[in-house]
Image 1: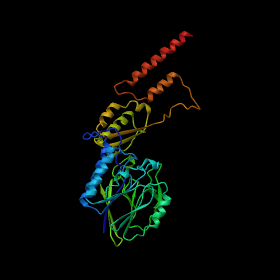
Image 2 (image 1 turned 135 degrees about the vertical axis):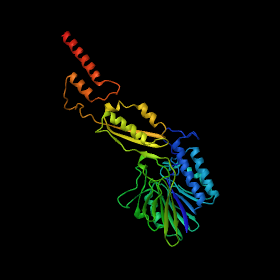
Image 3 (image 1 turned 90 degrees about the horizontal axis):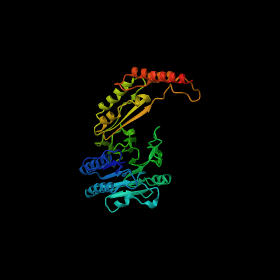
Image 4 (image 1 turned 90 degrees about the vertical axis):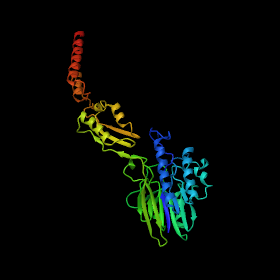
Length: 381
């Protein structure tokens, strides 16, 4: 029996938004990635698995900061001191475009129980009756997958470790829509006791023996409904396996029900936006609210200072406005010209103004000025 923890896409060093962590003075989202990784390591130190597999994108960038490197190094040394083997492959985020750039993984080669595979080719890692067949992000995955298929019959337990998008397993291809992601067919992943995948951020069972662990944090609003964590895998000598997902405690991310303005009055739009924000209890959360088909004139009446006040305790609160096309706007190809007085009346009828102003009075004043101007023009003729 072999007990494995399968983790991926920790993206250590990722940062976003402007919120600063009070305790450390660092970007809050950067701290969140550190916290998630530490939670994982704490679990590993308690459970003491035979092996940890990290399926790529340990770091968020090719050149992580010294701080990000230090955080990872500290945790790897803790695992090493406990005698826990850690096998990691390079993902697309940490693989340099130019080979001359070098890899951050070379810093960990002196740690006995850490095995980093990052040199643009298929490699195997032999560990007490377990062979890990590893393909990092590389230039020619078609070439390297041939090596994978040719060497999957070692004695003992054989595990494949890849960072790629898989296709051919049903209708979905597990893409992240990144320019340099690699694709591999499910039909190239045969005859392994377990296949540990990274790159796709959603925890997913592809087949009984093929899993994405998903990422350890949420990095976009497309991941709002996904659980974040890692997998605990037990492989038995008779070919049976058990796979269990463990959820990590992560930053709350919320995509609120959109405000559809089509059938709402100006005041109803303002009230609904405020209500959505208050109901979300945004403190310490990452939140998005879409306001759809809002008329431009209503948009200009929003109290942005009040909205800022209501959302100031969020780590990030994003309001995306989709402006309504003015159906009454002039068509450039077929213009229709009306008198200035008629245009002004039409404008005042559809334009929303602040509640403390008398719309009828403004309209009367405007018409009076227009009439005075027209009378002045007649006197000059």
